[in-house]
Image 1: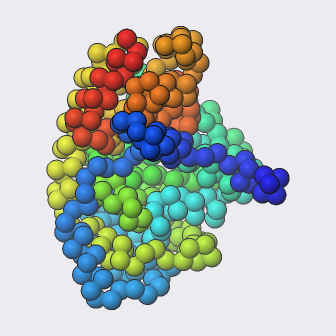
Image 2 (image 1 turned 90 degrees about the horizontal axis):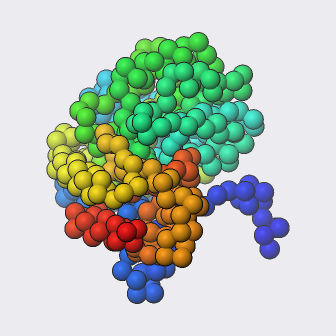
Length: 395
């Protein structure tokens, strides 16, 4: 009955990260000992002080529909967080709370993009950017970057990608999947290009903001000449280990925020009441309370880079944030290993799953066909065993 479905859904790609996770679950169900390094999900428990706030909210009988754009108290906590951590001044009408940062991105696409509008995506980009743009009848414009440049788009590349149809640029920093972090100086060079094109708007995805190993995070909206053209997207899934709580938010020009509020009101209405109350506590806390997770991720980064350096054919750089490595594995393309021909990153990732029993994600899903994404949001023991299996399968 596929012909009865809309062209929209028939043309929509399945999320590669979720597809690989599903494949790993199937193999586990068959009795295979799969080590999952595919999902971007911290392996820590949500901190106790946040869970206690949720329990208190339940006991206080928070159980009714929430305002579409979020509780006022949560929006005030977000405003305080933006000022404290990002030197950004937002007002209540500029904040919209959503069911995860993914919904926040979908809202922005739906209210900003018209058919044929082009959206520049520095590659690699988060797996869902391209299809979220396509769902709003936009046209993703991929700008390839290099591992030799830490996967960062240059001002010259941005300028070359702009056309009269360009409406937006979407990027993440720290980046999923590369872990790259744009410095203030690098963002300024991009902003200088955008100054010449006042019709172009920016989505700055900062969901990995606190998982930053270089010290210091900079937001595009901090530039006075970009503040009114930037939507800052954030949430609590990654830094606070709250993936299942599903709370994301934006700070944006008030006319964009009002439009997102209107869109969300017709799709999901307000986000979960208990999760919102817990997030108030999370955002009001000093970021030092989650530093233990960041410190552990930094140790794991060193561990996995050291181990991957021992495998011939893996070319890696040192990511400055998030919890991923994005090695170039193109040296294996065209080779046959254990009777299986590796033509591309998808073949390579599938080979690792079937032969090494390690789940990764093909870089093709992120706009870079030469790489794979490996998440180190896993225990050090699992990382050691996973890389040992990969090395053995490839030797």
